[in-house]
Structures are given as C-alpha cells and as structure tokens.
Length: 225
Image 1 (cartoon, rainbow, N blue to C red):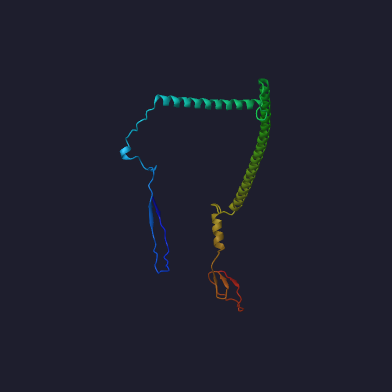
Image 2: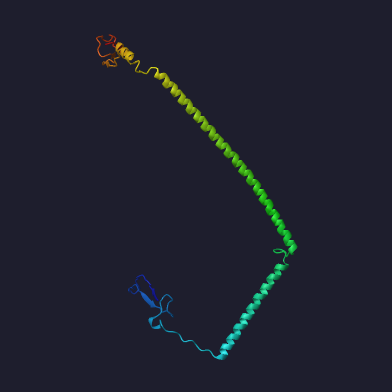
C-alpha cells in the first residue's frame, strides 16, 4: 500500500529575508501479509503443504482433552435440559400438569366452545344471507317494475303514433281520389313567390301592379296572379 502525505506550507518571509516554499512528502508502507483480494501466486498455486507429524504422546493428550471437553459440555447441556423440565413441571404460571381425565375434560370444553362459536357464526351468516336475499329480490322486483313501466310507455307512444298516422291517412291522395285532387289543385293555384322593396314592403305573388302606401311604412301586399 502506498500512503501519501502532503503538507503544504504557506510561503512566508523570514526576518532574514528568506522565503520557505511548499514541500511534498511521500511515505511507502508495505503490507505485512499479502492482501486477501489478491489471488494465489503462480509459484504456489499447485503446492501441497506437508502435514506436520504428531508424536504418539501429543496425539493421546489432545484426544484426552477433546474427550474431556465434550463430556463436560454434554453434562452441562443435560443439566440445563433437566432444569427446564423440572421448571415446567413445578411452575404454575406458564404450564399446569394435568391428568388424562383433566385433559379430556379441557378438550371437551374446547370442543363445546368451538361448536357454540360455529353455531353463532352460522346464525349470523344465515341472517346475513337472508338479508342479502331480500335485498336482491327487492332489487329485481324494482327492475322488473321499471321495465314494465317502460314497456307500457313505449306501447302508449306507439299507439299514439299509429292513431296519428291513421288520422293523417285520411288526407292522403289515393288512386280513387287522384282526379279530384288534381281538379282542386288546378282550381286553387298557390303562388309562393314574393318580393321585398327597399322600404321593407312585402309583395306576394309573381306579378303585381299595386304600389305601396304613401306613408312609407312597411306593409304586406297580398296580390293574386
């Protein structure tokens, strides 16, 4: 690792007139061991370390210490386990020791409480379903009544339209009344032409010889052909 320290000194003028400039210092630090992120060296990649040989006395002593440690640890665990069991059997705060008859009685009480709870929930569910069924029936009945009312209004409008068309059909020109209609149209001609002068007077008809009034007020002159 390279540790670089930089110390900047401001230039100042000494009493003797000398100046001191900036200085920069580098300090190199070597790792005691190779960093963990670097790979194995190529020269040591396939090297198999030699296993150190132990003497018989050393191996026997290590085995004795190991067995002694395991035995003591097993004893401590067994002691703690028995202590917990004893505490559970004698304590009445968290655990109560019951006989089989008492356990059966408690189980029956739980079953009865569960059955009562299920019955209460079933009753509430039946009431809720009955209420929802009534609301649905009322909604469907309301929709049916609204639909029937719309159908009646539609039929009434259709009947009025039919009566209106029947009444209008009385004035229709049929094959039998065609000649009479032609004679009536020729005897009573209708002229839809009209004219308006600058004064706003209205002259109906294709031709006219009558002049407007001298008052100059706009009026209508209904003239025939």
